[in-house]
Length: 225
Image (tube, rainbow, N blue to C red):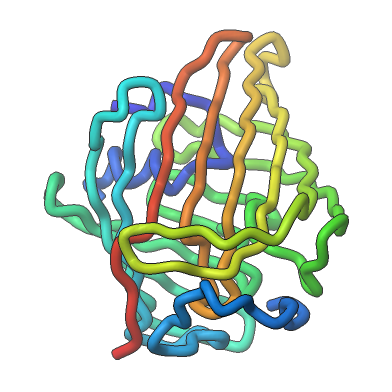
């Protein structure tokens, strides 16, 4: 349903539809922060995160999904994603900084650049670029992007209250065979070191100058098995 989008940077949402689916220590937390019950600063098989994805324009719940780490190697983390709204599962391969390397419909070289870069400090910036192959059509997109840590914020979701780094990412890309087909993605990520994941993401993508998607992803449950 969303395969028409060229918004490679938010391929997590694309694949959930299509297949049915750290940093330096932050400053001392103020008393208002609710500490997560389990530290997950290193990925382990069985770590899992559940999210609700909503349309930012209408507020409508699009779907819920759960991601589960199935395997960890020195260079990669394999994650299984599935949603009760859709049949089937999808497998995602990340590096240890949570940059996506591949999923059932996208392959990124070297990765999609939407992870974190250590150490995380307010004001830190980094740039990235990648080639993204959209497997169903054999189409390649060339992308360039940049990220900046703009703040440290306490944020509350359905899973609790977290101390996070707020990261703003901008990605521009075009079809390698037709440079007139362009897209842009603006992604705001609230990354919580204590659970080694984002607890909220807001993604807005445009294709040829028109808004194609505006979605938010919010953590509602997590744990270590």
